[in-house]
Length: 622
Image 1 (cartoon, helix red, strand yellow):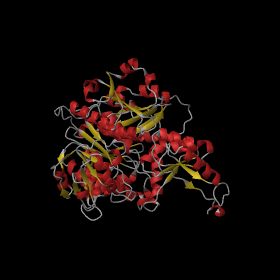
Image 2: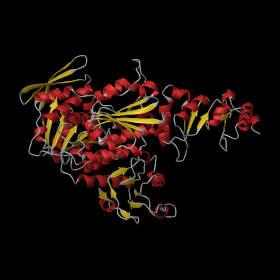
Image 3: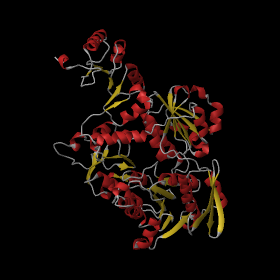
Image 4: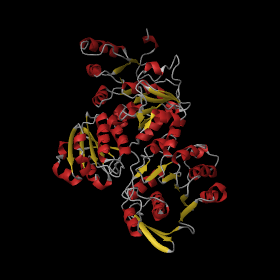
């Protein structure tokens, strides 16, 4: 906890406190849609090309948020925040993004734990997550959630660090010159891994050499760096630049003499065995992957584990006992690596359920992201979370489960099914429908799985609890041919088109034919969450399904039919009127339903601009 005045000093801001005094802060919020709890929360109003966080201050004030960091003046004729929100406290800064980074930098300086910084063109998130899998049982590890590696994501990740953590692992990604120095100041890594050098974001750099120089700035204050010497641009720059003369390095290579010399790689159907010369000793590991990217990522992790004794990482609860990993133990853990889901996966479940699969790990940071994703799903009224014990959190267990119960209650989740001894012990903290089981097998033996009906179920479990058993049981059995819809790409495309529009231009998204086979509920939910203004469907029955799934956006119906007009009015949809017959039929439907419909009925008038299929022509206009 920091006081708001502490934070104001850290970012050199102008502080205005409400009459309620100097509030304490432990949670940062940058997206009004992702509010977990208004208590002890500071909303940072970021300004970007596409959005302005200051627009959402009123909405958050209504939801109970009382602390804001802004970059607009506090009191002008246009932005009179102090009068509008009398119970709120404000920090006013010149640039809210810079303030966020300065705040995280100041917070980072409170801790002396070793920090691993990971950068490179590809593989950053995989290396970070695999190291968490490999070391999570030995150390209390804080890491970036998902792929939070940007100018915004990095400070939010570092903010989660506290004194209980033995090791931090943060990834840093850049897209143009000048960005890495700011991320280095926030992370301050003592150890580094640069995964590789590729073509990603080449367009913003004069050449790849310049990009490598920029990426290596992350390690200008580090003491130890692991990298593959098969990328000569990395080796050459480290040798030439005087700033890196004192940096200790550990190299691996498949081509030349190095600290970890890969001598042989042998692939079978599902497993790859890798042999290496390490200090004149032949050692080997197996990994459950055969693609080249996974092999490269695994070797980076292997190199890190081989250097564990040199890196100064100790367990704070037993500081005199050095953690050592034998070659055989390392090999055992490498073989147990699991694939990393790069995003939350939404699957069709049994009995008309939707399953959100996030069961390869469970920690307090990623729980908030998963709960947020669950609350976005409106295709079912009922929402359930199946949650295992949170392991290696570094928090007092009572405080931890009290916080988790608060998050779940705030997101209005209907039911929790807890699996594990710890979460069961604190069952009284949860004030919604609840069931608790000691382990996964106990749940499978006693819970009637067929009772899951028409609900959205989030699976959130640590690997130890083998939630893949639940995932396999609850997911609708599918054919081998699948179409995968990348929601991240959909949002990226939406924002790209928005960047080409004048501010204030509204957007209408076509979701007819059930989003062309890609799933109308899921697509419409995402579009609604990202503030599209309108949806358009071909027929009224498609719009009815969206309304039943909780979609509140205006919906235009492109082909209103006579027999569907009553339904269209009942569900507050807006017909496209393309001839006088439809207009007259609509008037009759309004007369029939005038006591049960909204006060006004909005219509869209279709003009024939040349295709001569549907629409009014010039002589019809009067």
